Image (tube, rainbow, N blue to C red; front, side, top):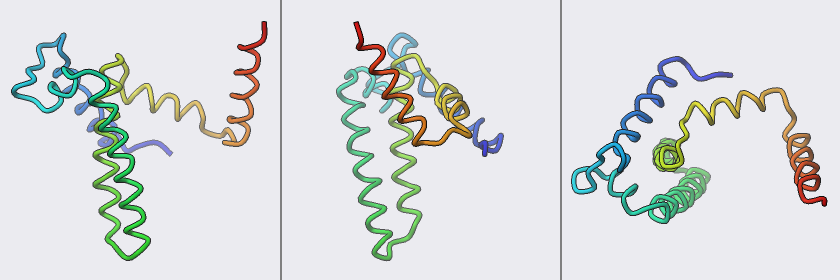
Length: 126
């Protein structure tokens, strides 16, 4: 299943905005939340990713106890946003993530994990 074109366009547009806030692109930390996160360095946005991931878990637990499902959507949006900030910092884009997900389509998660273990062992062998 791929994202509707409008969703891909939205992610690409947001990625462009985030990229425009990179320090090397003139992002002003006094005028932009993203530029401020990027200016502070990886520890700042990586901490936010951890916080947002925890909030996704808490929202899901709330939904399990009767809360509106929109709480999960709201928190996942925050998580994705902060992950996109990290991607931009490292010179990556949502398209790179989508390409990886596309690559995995049709592959059993169990097989994928087993293959990663084999490759890791091979790379450690003398």
